[in-house]
Image (spheres, rainbow, N blue to C red):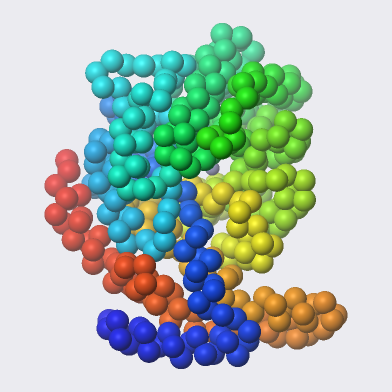
Amino acid sequence: MSSNKTIQKTYDLARERFAELGVDTETALAKLAKIPISIHCWQGDDVGGFETAGAQLGDGLAVTGNYPGKARTPQELRADFEKALSVIPGKHRFNLHANYAEMDGKRVDRNALTVRQFQNWIDWAKTLKIGLDFNPTYFSHPMVKGGLTLTHQDESVRKFWIEHGIRCREIGAGIGKALGSTCLTNLWIPDGMKDTPADRKGPRLRLADSLDQIFRKKIDRKHNVDSVEPKLFGIGAESYTPGSHEFYLGYAVDRGTLLTLDAGHYHPTEGIADKISSVLCVLPEIALHVSRGVRWDSDHVVTLTDDLQAIAQEIVWGGYTDRVRIGLDYFDASINRVAAWVIGARNMVKALLLALASPIEKLQEAEGAGDYTSRLALLEDSKMLPFGAVWDYYCLTQNVPAAETWLATIKQYEAAVLSKRA
Ligand code: RNT
Ligand code: ZN
């Protein structure tokens, strides 16, 4: 592998090449260092959480694979994530789910959780100087009845889950206040129907009412902001999802929440990139769950696809870096989970770098002049620019391994730590 000197030399040449197209790579890297990615806790333990040992995942979510070494305790998950962070350039956030509560001996049910069950996470985040985000957990629980939560006909079921939503916003506010960094509390429910419903309206009206109860209390937006996450379908809910895109888009606009666009939640060929500027015409802020569906919402590890690049381009080229909270959402249990975190997160950062170092001014100039020939020509030729040299240099300046060399660190960790887990 290249020495630091080679990386520097290669970068110096690359920098000149980018400058020829009007791109200042120094500015691009300074901007890149300021974009946090909210990295999801649930890749580390297959969405298991720590409420009860060996919780059964279901309710539309599925993790496949049984690669050894998954985190079995909060301590292990924290250590694994620290290892991942040590090879991801930039300053990022950690995205918790309510089922990662630490009970400290006495079991607290979802409708009674408080920030106390997350104090260890807060203390840990403080020592790492990172922000935390949060999610209510509307799955893997006996009160999910027939796959339904906030839309259930039975008021007692809805009430339980409304209380859970209320508690989670309070927890989000507590987290945001304690860390001095606004927490995003993102709400997704699995509710839906396997087969053709006879009533599409009722569940939606109940969902709107449940959400209104959850969001009734005003919370200082400095500490917590709320978001709602639409979905087209889930396993076992193929025919109908009350919380559809149109439902939540309208809800977010009307009630002033954020909207979370998950890359796996639309028709298989429908990307979320084009939705970003569309919804940001009306919403002040949105959140993303960057994921990769393969044939369905399969939550594969994020790779550097055209879809990912289109998402990053829209955020960067639209000037939206302060209005889009970028988060990751995938879970793969068939490979080393720490590596899965790293690969997906590094790819997200790479995609942002590609967008930041693109000759966007020249592209927009050509477009403005109606010269679509030049636009297409430059768009295609710019794909051959020496981005790799800039990426390696960025890793160097961020004190993380460049190119493929990070893997050795994770393999060592696997041999020393992960492989010893039963
Ligand atoms: C499910 C949603 C949701 C979950 C996480 C675990 O389809 O994408 O965001 O993946 O909350
Ligand atoms: Zn999601």
